[in-house]
Length: 108
Length: 119
Image (cartoon, rainbow over all chains, first blue to last red; front, side):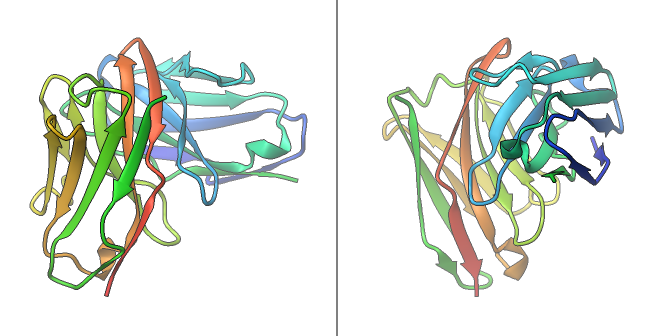
């Protein structure tokens, strides 16, 4: 499976909302699609799994939606610490664990 | 508290084998939803290397499949990455990751990241 993410870069102000898209070249088995946040110098952090389930400790400003081949990560009320690169990844099947190319979110 | 600690050389010669180990504490390595390895080459995004599932299934990146092996050692409670015939393109920060729980309730744990340079 090839994952495509858009946009490549988002530049937004604090308090605004963001919608990050992840599109798969074929249907994601069981909608096992995860979203990760990756800040420079840190290990990635799981935000969302199974397309829409928030991981433990993740603020409800982060939400995931979608199914099949089209998925979205929505971040509401952006905060400065949300500045990071966000990756989608499919998992849990023989189709592998490919990451998308990432969306960089910049907070002005 | 579950912890993952990576170990291995930071410098590997071209054509040799890169070997990294991820020691797991406070959780049996035989019980995770999956264990895996991910890397980030300089200036690039995250790249999936491979994953070992609780079911025993192991999946590797197609681009690395001919050179990579991931194994789990339950006696030492650790899992390992072996990447053969390395080149400069394998220079990256390597992360081990554990997804604990079930498909309906996952929690991620990460190693500290290891810079590996092929030179």
